[in-house]
Image 1 (cartoon, rainbow, N blue to C red):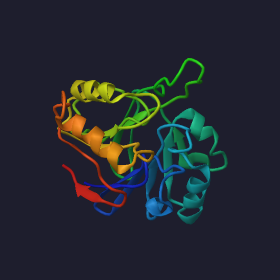
Image 2: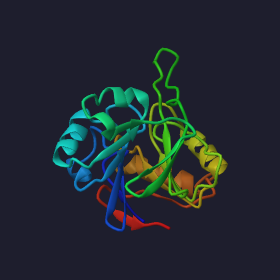
Image 3: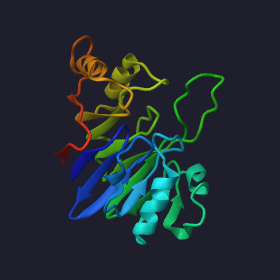
Length: 213
């Protein structure tokens, strides 16, 4: 499959002409949804979910399907059966990709900050997008999309998270608020300057694509 990084937390997965987009939010380039067959949304925060962008994509493509949690699904009223609410432990097929749901809650930011629901998606038993949580799936993960920067984690937690998941490789997401210095610093710590995370880590620039098994 081909993985393409878009702004902040959004990626597109393609295979055999089919396109699956994850978390096209308010910091995502609008063309990320061009030609999409299906969309997955982990949670309701603006940097992961843009109601306007999804409604526009649905108008342009009557066949577009969306899978997300109950909270986001409730904000997409009017799209009917094209939107499916899913939760922890469920499995489904989206644009020909097998998807399994892991996780329930957004990582805590502060006791005064209300938590929202957050689900992660394991795609074809190989690629995992956790959204805004450090969810550890109870299965093998080959490629982990690692949320490298947010108000709810430290680099030390990321190192421990990668060690626990034990993927073959990680790619940075949730990095829209980092400049090049910050991205390089975090990548260095994950790749072995200091304790390291025991899995090769790489940051893709927006629009860059790679092939993954």
